[in-house]
Length: 424
Ligand SMILES: *Cc1c(COP(=O)(O)O)cnc(C)c1O
Image (cartoon, rainbow, N blue to C red; front, side):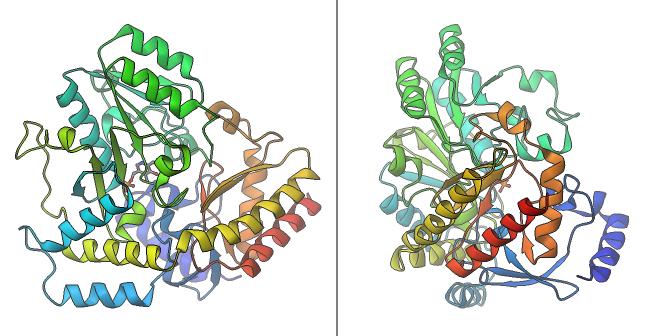
């Protein structure tokens, strides 16, 4: 496989963009080699600037639940763009998307749209502190909630991959109110809540930023019980899991209702959208009704709203996740078969997200993921790339499935995995 043009593009990019990329994981630092530059994408495939086509398991890190460049979505967005790109004034399409989210997720009574997942969690934290009048935030080791300062502590994928758990430039003053607990261990949370002054517990209900790590039976319900008892808000960060682990996210899958939830990725369908949603009483604490300030010049951008709305409409109409579950069921049984014959490979899968771990037992928290054979993952990644399969370039990342991935694609993946393991 030729990567001449990608190599040249990277060299040029590094001169004017730090590290040549606008988000660190794209630089392939964790897997060696140089990144491929993408020219276009359609359905379950991406094509690089050298003309190589890859079966894509990144799916733009989650948003492409319908597959890339869905024709209906493209037409709707183009039509919307013909009316103007941005007005900085309210539009009816924002209300339509908020209504759609409420219809799909009853506990999301009100929604505020922003332009990224980072903005969504940043706002949720500020809102929780404003609403409760308390200061501390509990997060979990290996959970990523975007790159704003107060949550950039033990933040999984990006930081973990690059070996910077805490970033320079984040002041101790900012993070001193952030308490980090181990995922799947509620004892730490109980102690931290007892100590008091906690505004919120924020959690990825199924973690996706340390690879896919599922909550143990009862973990989320225990968080709900504890937070309720201490009058602390429970925030589900569903930026990645929303509409991927279940049609109704963690609420649908585990029957646990958070006070607030944050969304992104799928609800923008590939354009920049984030959202905070939850009980109307709490949401109304946001400006202009409430005292908690939050704003955004491009928030609720009409083209992005149209892209998200059309994506969710198709998602519902075509029973997209149900179809993906058929394919992911096929993947799950294939992986169970392969991992059953190996003593140092395991996997985790939930709905349209999965990870193959190079460790014998499926990890249940960050230290267990960190125990994986990262050198072997590197070889695996490169082997798959050569076989025309684009994986997220880190062991700490989730793989994503779309509506367009077929059982044949899954067989391609499984055969390549098996060949790789046979060669090792
Ligand atoms: C991707 C992600 C974010 C950050 O979203 P951005 O749009 O990249 O800012 C926050 N939380 C979770 C769980 C994510 O997966």
